[in-house]
Image 1 (tube, rainbow, N blue to C red):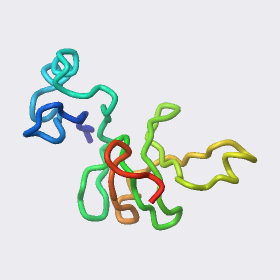
Image 2 (image 1 turned 60 degrees about the horizontal axis):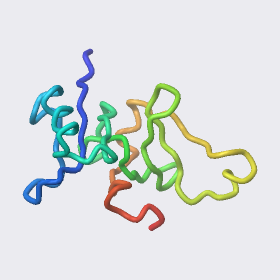
Image 3 (image 1 turned 45 degrees about the horizontal axis):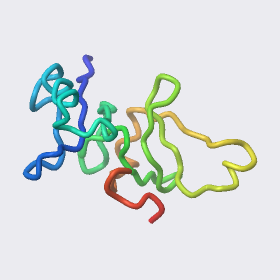
Image 4 (image 1 turned 135 degrees about the vertical axis):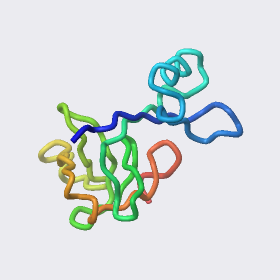
Amino acid sequence: MKKEIKFRAKSFDEDVDWAYSTDHGLSDFFHGIEEGRYNEETLGQFTGLTDKTDIEIYEGDIVELETYGRGKVVFNEGMFQYKPIGIKYWEIEKGVRTYAIYPTIGGKVEVVGNIYEDDINK
């Protein structure tokens, strides 16, 4: 099984919300970042997974996970992980915890936004 490597970033073009590497090819996409057509701070890689409604999950997405609630998708320690939002006692006592995202998660997670456009504390 071959994993498709894709990226997305917010576009500075008023007519385009997000730019995807599959639309432009990887080298053209990253050239667009260098030229300032896309916002590098919003760059996120595709996890290779989709949610329960078949929406692709990207780094920077806010997801609702049945077992843990709302969290953001991060790339940490060589893997995509789910980082819970709003669990302050973990941050104080044990450090911020993250959980690996596995292919079996699809039926239990829903993309509800992203950290660049949405209030992560809602």
